[in-house]
Length: 122
Length: 141
Image (cartoon, each protein chain N blue to C red):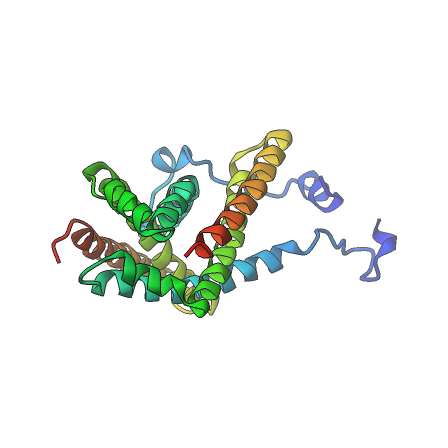
């Protein structure tokens, strides 16, 4: 295997390089969520007469729909990175681990589709 | 196992295992940074489990005026409010601990004393924010 790479016989390049990509994605999505959280938390804490009209009018704006859907997709990617870490750390059996990771991906994809449905229902 | 890993064990190098969740209460001393770290994981896992509940609440709150009243009925319940308060804490802890991570990624407050100090602040700020959200949730202001 060492012959296949060009970094010398003593260095073995391993891995699919998804480590750095996922690490960075976790950070980028976190920053998006921080901004979104500040807006929503501010809305929640300052709201006086909390009613459907006010709540729905915030979500009926196109820019907020898009901001929401981007944040939620980011959230699901973030959840994937975190949940994968948890399964990798605590589940030792490779078969069960793979099954749990597979289930997590499918579940998060379903949640993403559901989110689109919710956001565009208003 | 890759060749590199096999080589390492052959040479008798120390093997660093992940600390199991059951070890932390008995085997290890837990400084503030360790408490923040494990709570970051616990809160993240908890929110993952309750994700469908939150999406359901969002759906009912947005779909129509009728579903909004349904949403109001679900939320106007002490049991639901306690769950939501727990989720608020989970979110706010994850949020503040995450911001601490972002600072540390940029090599800020990395030394031992500073890291413990910021960990304490994470616990204080997240609990304070949870109290504020809780007061709003239970209709105090």
